[in-house]
Length: 186
Image 1 (cartoon, rainbow, N blue to C red):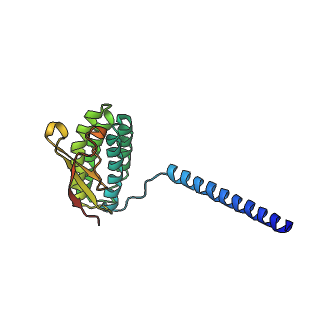
Image 2: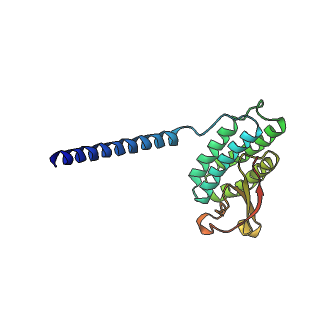
Image 3: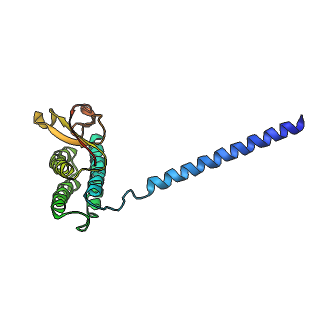
């Protein structure tokens, strides 16, 4: 009986050790993946559009959170990511559109006011929308609209989820808006 108790105790100890090792390995992998750069090599306009949309969504999320500092940082990362799009990767018409997008994003980087950033997000959305229509990304994108934004003039934005998270009002009117269009992925 004593031998069985020792064997069971040893087995439980080994199992606990394996679980603990597995948990710290998983935590280490999660930390590595969260600190690793998210940028992948851009090859062609579809990859470039996907990269632009990733940055756009990060900026949109900062606006949803009503965080001007986070929006500035997201916009700065957006500008840097678009600099990775090279002439060899995309046609000239695409590069012209990216240049206009960079100018729109640079204006957001220069602003510390959340309401100004939100107003500057409108022309950025127009540019990214046009680019996405012409050169679809890998995944579908939803084109959302809030009729109450900007004193009832309305405002559009792109989102990767069907759930409405309004970047123009943040938590004041988070769910104000509707999906107007689905831009199919490639």
